[in-house]
Length: 172
Image (cartoon, rainbow, N blue to C red; front, side, top):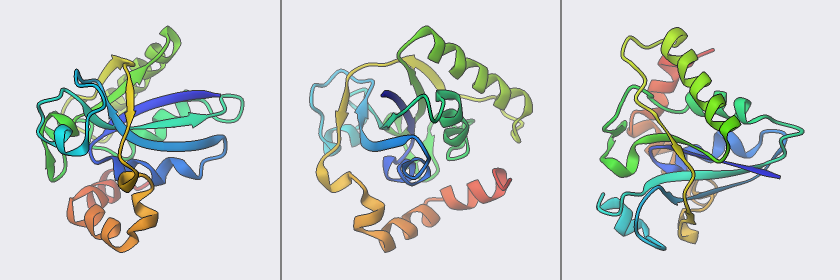
């Protein structure tokens, strides 16, 4: 078993694209990259803890590769926005790929290069590539939010601008 950690703005929106992929065993919402131990959602939203909202993807690398997970990740975000994602603004909503090995770092850098050179954007990719740090699972109410509150989740995804952006830039 391996784990990938990515940040792409609101963590609720990063669970559905990964949860049903072959080889993915679990997707956990949480916080990483900051300097506060066991942060809460309320604390992270202040943008004072240094944490970003992220997901931890537990997967079987014999079935799905880290690189394939990154391909899915890029198609969920606006990688050119360094101020947050869509309507969610601030440090806690910035995008990042967290690596746990030199191989993961190289894969992340290669995938970023591909998006920069061949992606549908004129602006340069701002997504950070950072070493993994402690991942703190979010409160239970934020786990599998799209299943617990499907209507609110769909309204949020559309209203935030994420859904329209994905449809415009990542159609195929």
